Image 1 (cartoon, each protein chain N blue to C red):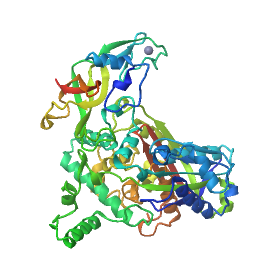
Image 2: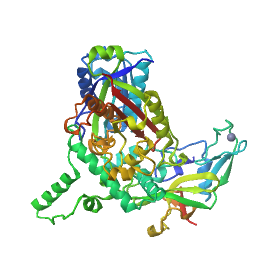
Image 3: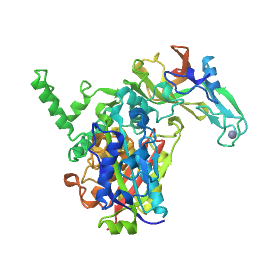
Length: 415
Length: 137
Ligand SMILES: [Zn+2]
């Protein structure tokens, strides 16, 4: 296998988009190609993540329209679908094809226009990523899956639920804090900012002015933070978001000719799991533990070597469980580590310095590529106020379905 | 026929394991087990991934279950909007059968506790549909 590097990245401003899936992807792809000092004709193939194009826009077979839109209509263009991990799965395959020597320069990424669906339709579409034969007919939802995980975690590690909920709230507070520093994030506001905006609105309208003593009291207020699936409230959940992200991968010899700062793909992993009830213990997701191990082994590193990790915080409890499965903290210790500030920028390991799915948003076909975008920018030292000082190794973690698909990618400085 | 009768919203009509739904219509919640290697399957399967044969027998899930975890869902997906709130759960039954499903509305919410004893039951839904649920044992 050859060494492979990321030579350019691009992403749209995440949020509510008035552009089509293909238009969003073109915008991200052009940014990535320009950054790589390449032209579209240099791209040999597209590895493309998208999940619900058929539901969102009535558009299947989207990948060939995406390459036509960037001016290379005849190159192979293939869609990868692994639920919320689709973007990562596409990038991992792109890496393997370049590493194998079959291609020298490829484009990978994804796009998703989730907000083209209303909330019940999007909730159902997402739920289709669990087992549709047995779980769907009972009314499964993704907040429901992770809410059950929160109860399980609380019970297993004997952390009283009110305590765990405070620790989960601190995940949201941290990620919103980081998101405020990210000009591409859907929500560029701290939880405190959101509280103050509500107070200002109530004052302006002559309505009763809320008197929350602190963020925790705001979190406990079910009038502003409704219970979605107990114990998960609205601010425990990532938002529905539109967006696209793309990156150019090149063999190391090509990469060194294109940029002074090639970011090496040091290791990748991908694993699967069956239905929810087939999983022995979903606080310790086997698919994630095995996938991360593949990536660590290939990169020749251990979890303490990782400076920052963009991981799958689709819900606050999901961040805590992911941190443990990836080996950054002992099982049962993750929620306490969050409370101690060990996962902040400048802490033991920076978890989601971008703001994560929670603040950046979660357009599911694009998220994995968006995570790589952040790690690449961090390793190059281009993240301004949210920069993790001296970062040399970064990792991504993306989860699809109820841990049915997990993909991990480790990147390191190539200079 | 078969899976079109299963649960609130099902996208599947026919299936190799359609007997599962016929049994539900008779009030029985069944798992399958391989006649050759005895591996147990829930959700039931007709093809055994352990010994690659396709000869299974059906058996009723035992009445001694334990609640592993649960949640009260307040916002349902499309097709379930009017159904919410409802309680989803995972329960462990004898013989290593782990089952995801709904907790019966008969159980008072304050009585729900991890580890509580449960038994599987069949709930009859509108339009002659059926769904298995967990009731207090
Ligand atoms: Zn067998």
